[in-house]
Amino acid sequence: MPANINDINSASSSSSGPPDANPVLTAYESYVRDTPLVTRYVLNAVVISYFMSFFVDPTFALANIPYFTLFRFQLYRVITSPLVCSSILNLFFAFMGFMNNGVKLEQSMGSALFGVLFFKLTIFTNLLFLVVSMLLYGLTNNDGYLAGVSVGVWTVLLSIIATECAQAPPNSKRKLFFLEIPVLYYPLVLLALFSLFAGFRLAYCLGVAVGYLQGFGKLDRWKVKVETARKWESERGCLRGFYSRAGYISVSSASGPNAWAEGSGGGGNNESSSGGGGGPVAVRAPSDPGASSSTPSFPSSGGQSLGGGSKRGLLSRGSKSPKTKEERAALLERAAERRRQQRDEGDSAV
Image (cartoon, rainbow, N blue to C red):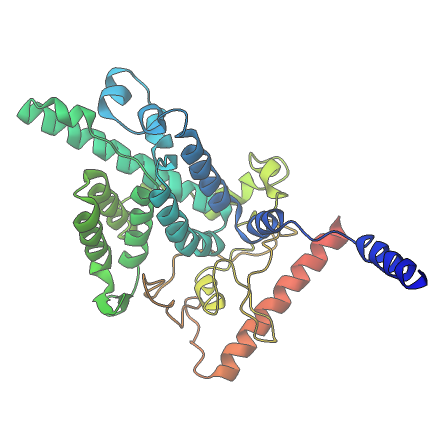
């Protein structure tokens, strides 16, 4: 009998401990902590759109269809079209593509400028899609061009990839699975691969074209200056409500091309410490939007490759690339120390 009482006491003491963490909740908290704000909002919208597809057709309601956009004057479709997802396969590729490219790009530019770039490429691609569709309709009198669809986040993602490749050094190459392709032609090869498996899509072609125009500076007339973005992030700016949210990256704390170099050891939004860890860490809001004068930009090298690791040596312009492991470790340690100082300053300010 005493043995049974001891067993009962030990069982009750073990059950009185803290419950195991919910793995779903833990994964979501990690996703919120490690994913920058604009990238997270875009992916959240894509997920919501996918679950809405079980009840209604989001493509019919939100996609850029010339008949509805122009003849029904539903102009909101020009902005909402990349946020539509109606299949689990599209959802998987949206996360795979945007987590590889969107996270790093938002770290390099800052959330405000990345959001501007995302919707700028979206609007220009959709406007060009409407113009081309109407021209084809006028030339052929085929109503099918009025029912054409520009939809999905890959329309914008291909534009972003083309922009990055257009600004990369001309002699660099990017890896597509086991092939090394000249960086300038990488978006075209990727587009051909998409067309081979998913069929020809006019919106994808126009997205790549708009990306090249952006990369070669043909759309700089509509470029938002860094000083303007800093004003938006000030206490009286239009983004003051987003500045303190988890994952927001200000223009001043954007790491520029260093985002690709610092994250070469892991996945999205990595920040390596002096111990050499490559795991993701939280993206935190900076303490002062005007504390630094660094200007975010696209990487000046090949960038992230599909089916391969990221390129090395993507550091700020004008600086030498580290040649040895010791130099790279010292660079990453200094970057981690700067971010710890920024977090300490932000905590002390609060």
